[in-house]
Length: 323
Ligand code: BTN
Image (cartoon, rainbow, N blue to C red; front, side):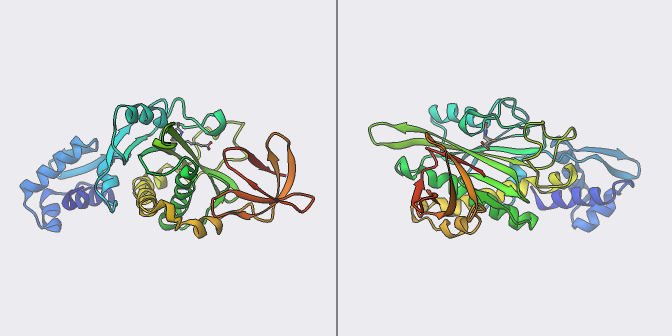
């Protein structure tokens, strides 16, 4: 957003109940009254409701929606393509179709609501209106299918770092791709790939991130209300930070993604793992209980069974639950 325009909306926001005169705004921004008029009209066009009266201007409703302009303001790179929706079935499904039609790497699809949000293992992802960030990112990396897990783990670290930077809150990672805040899930990641069978490499990967911003008015549905949480206390706080949070997730992610095979984010992942030392139920063909001892450099989970044998678990084959 243009700096003057941003300053004007901030000034209007801060003087919510009273009118601000054109002369006052012009003076503070060091621009002409004509320019103030131009910026006010641009702000109205962007969906803000501003009353124009004899005494000047008054903000009625600030458009707090997710917008590519607001996101771009804090992005390090400028080679993204954004598609922003109010509602969609699933950003992952939409982006997979776009990828088949040739969409470019770094196409980012974000929606304020998903009617058919998808989670891992065929589950659904609760995506109510405006109370979360539902985002998918298109990647076309030159890596093997086995290395695709790096996209998920790199994204998990990026989400944690963005939350730490913007909200100053400490989050943990539950192997392999759930982000936890105060012991409850705040974010899930679903990575879907189209594999080229000849090269055994992904043609493309769609990285889907679902982050709960605030608990919806009627609460979470019964199935998840004891295990899910949100980042902010209410909508006002969420609206203030959601765009910059998206920018920072992308900044952190693409910083490591450019050398993803170097796994520079490995230590940052390992130190945020909250399963270490805990006993978990391993849900594979034969179910058993084991203690988590760490995460290997290839991001497989290392557990010790009751015979003191160390077993490496691959994220595609098993899932774990606390025992
Ligand atoms: C999980 O927790 O099982 C993964 C949840 C992933 C949800 C995100 S929201 C954006 C993207 N679109 C989807 O339909 N799913 C992912």
